Image 1: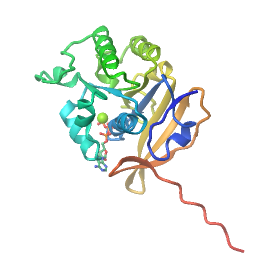
Image 2 (image 1 turned 135 degrees about the horizontal axis):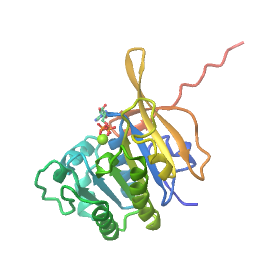
Image 3 (image 1 turned 90 degrees about the vertical axis):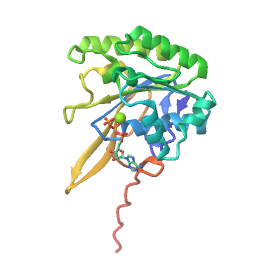
Length: 245
Ligand SMILES: Nc1ncnc2c1ncn2[C@@H]1O[C@H](COP(=O)(O)OP(=O)(O)OP(=O)(O)O)[C@@H](O)[C@H]1O
Ligand SMILES: [Mg+2]
């Protein structure tokens, strides 16, 4: 089985070497938990380390903000875009009622068929093997209607599986301890990873948990990580001290 390595230090070992090629993973977490950084890193590593072009659909952050967020970690997205290894589909400007000069953009009030067409076009142009949607709350689906969430996500996920594109659906979590926003998104995807921020003695600490990863024996533990100069990095557990006799 071919797997798409995330290239995130310490993570691929927890999921049997990477994400099964062509599958879809829901990546959820509260605000500031690192979802966007994770998505950017997955695409950037895919292109630069594994020769897998990528597509990023951005629904709530304008492309220039993303480029500048990525540049903090030394990831120059423009260079990848110029090489046609990366396409950013701007669905954020239209939603904000702002003009965009991006080559790939979706207007305000777009529907899922238009999104699917644009995704198809971008994948075809880059020969993409990876895709990130950041975040699915911006897709215009009524999250109060779980069956609608399921149906719409299933449509996009089925297209991506058909095209053998390994994908991350980013989802925000509003209720603490929930796995997704509508509670059903993870049923459509083959994997579920949550990024968590929790209080440990007055300071926030980050950890990641793999809840589901089909066809994969994976870790069921919470794993600490940090966001540093090179993005997300799993932090190795301190070795327990062996007692000397
Ligand atoms: N250069 C950096 N070095 C270390 N940590 C950083 C750096 N840049 C951002 N961070 C951390 O990453 C967090 C933002 O991560 P990210 O944008 O991926 O969150 P998110 O889960 O996508 O949030 P949202 O749901 O609001 O979009 C910041 O709040 C900060 O804690
Ligand atoms: Mg984000």
